[in-house]
Image 1: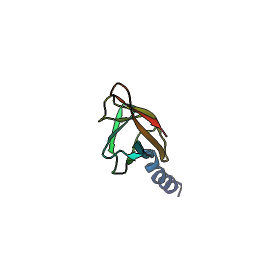
Image 2: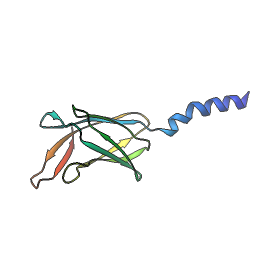
Image 3: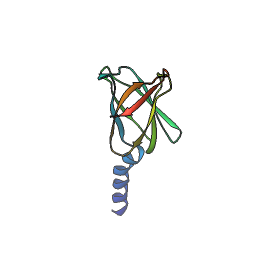
Image 4: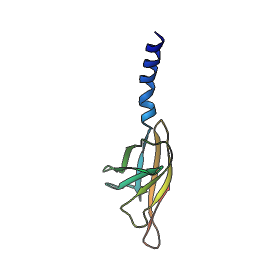
Length: 109
C-alpha cells in the first residue's frame, strides 16, 4: 500500500517538475500591437522561441525556471529585457521604442 501511495504522489508531481510556467504578455509600439515579432527567451543556456500574434500578444512555454532574457531578434540592437520563469505563468508587457541611433529598446509597461 505504501508503494502505491508513493507511485501516485510521484505521478502527480512529475509534470510540475518537468515544466515551468508560461511567459506571456504583449509587445506594443506607439499604442499598437507589434505583429509577427520573433521572441527568444534564453534561460540557463537553453533558448525557447515564439512569435507575437497580430495584436502583439504572445504566450511562450518556458521549460526552464529562473532568471531569463527575452529578446526581440528581428530588430536592430536586439532589444532585450530580464524576465523570470516560474512554475506558474508570468506576465510581461513591453513597449518597443526606437532609439536615436536606429536601434530599438523594450521597456516594461
